[in-house]
Image (cartoon, rainbow, N blue to C red):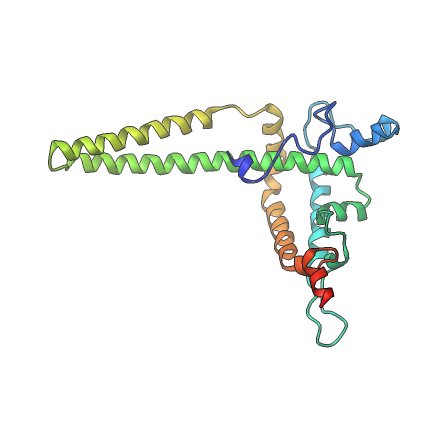
Length: 226
């Protein structure tokens, strides 16, 4: 449910031959490069703390690049380094390249972080929904106890049955076990989630504000035409 809402496709961006190898690695192998030259994920599929810390440094670099700086010319509005970057390259990936972070490794780490974040948010969503359903059922049972007649009680009973069925469905979904790899990576990512979320939100906000100014976008070309 949540993975679809956030656009997190755990299979996207990977090579067809090995589900643990990012797509960039597969492309290099097809081009004839030695497989040993490409990043190979660890056999257990687990993130390391130093990888998360390096990932955060990339996000910090991307966030700094996205912050407006006073333009040199008088009368010009604030500018950002992102204005001159390729709009088809995500700011974090551009930052990883600037910092010399191997692209295959960075993309693999990013996928694992997104998987862990989606897992945590999905668990919270299920917990919030169950709490809401319990409160609703409690209110309905109280209403049934004071119903004026049998017809009113029947109507409340039907509503209770519907909410109980929904509660059972959510409980079943919440009880589905996460893969051990995702649970392990969530334990590694958990202490950093707040920082990662804040940096990503800053990048997304700046990117949204700068989109009309970035070179190569339809909005920027329209402005140049005038």
